[in-house]
Image (cartoon, rainbow, N blue to C red; front, side, top):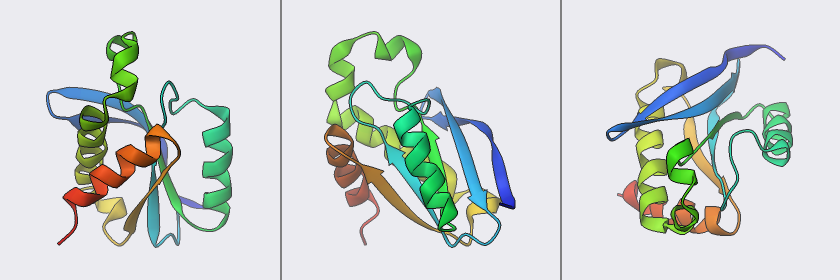
Length: 127
C-alpha cells in the first residue's frame, strides 16, 4: 500500500514528549488515534493488527504512548482519565497541525479505559 506518511514520531504534549507511529495511506480521508487502555502501548500487537485493518480500508492510524516510560512505572497513572485525555487531546492538536494530515478528519479508537479517555478528549473539540 502506498503511504503518504509512514514513520516513528515524537509528539510534544505539554512539557513532555511521547513516542508514536503514524501511518497515513496515500488517499486517506481520516486518521484514527488509538486511545490505549491501561498498560497498553503503541507496541501492542493487537493494536497494530487493528491499525493494519484500518489502513487496508484507507484510514490513517496514530498509535502512540499516552504515558512516558517513567510515568508508566506508576500503576495509578494508567487509570488517570484526566491526565490521559489531556494527552490524547494534545496529540490531536499536534496531528491537526501536521501538513500530511490537513485534509483528514480525526477519530478515536479505544476500549475500556481507552474509551473513557477518548470520550473525554473528544469533548474538547466539540463546537
